[in-house]
Image 1 (spheres, each protein chain N blue to C red):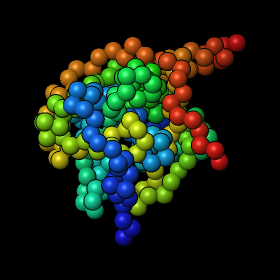
Image 2: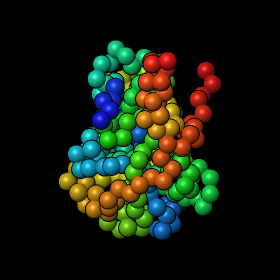
Image 3: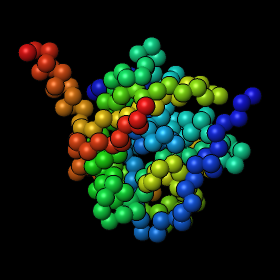
Image 4: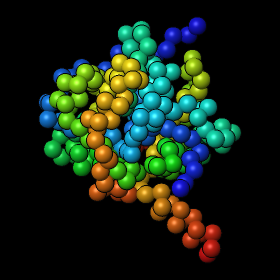
Length: 85
Length: 145
């Protein structure tokens, strides 16, 4: 099981065309900064994403995510390969 | 108090897809997950100035390309191992209106109440394997800054 940095519905897009969620759904909001690579979604369907921006909203802060293609296992394998090289 | 953005402002002026068109969601979904997603939408948007409960789906409107079933599975939903699908006609006949929201082929399925999610889950049926899982099609081109 892969923990996610920020819970999101990766089906949900808004007017920016990006996936969106609220900042307070992050495990550690301090890592959710523009340009950062994060794991988003839920434990059943995690994906690697880039934080695009944080947008103020009347009910919190909206986080826009650019979901990267590919299986998360591929990213994990890459990280292991690099770490052990 | 600042007003919430209204989903109506983001509805595309286009007719509802034909009844046989499939709506698609990356899964697996559950009642609990859909409740959380609907409550997130409720927190973020209103519809015609009133609270709105809904979830995001994609409509496989085309035979080929990014808005086809294969295109959605290999693009926007390629990070999902499994998908849920249901025909537009079945969903709307069961009392779940669909709005064409934001960029095509995104749509918002309106729930009416959280108590109806179990009905929707039955319509969506069990999740099925996404044959395009792990495809490396880029979901969206980054906006120029």
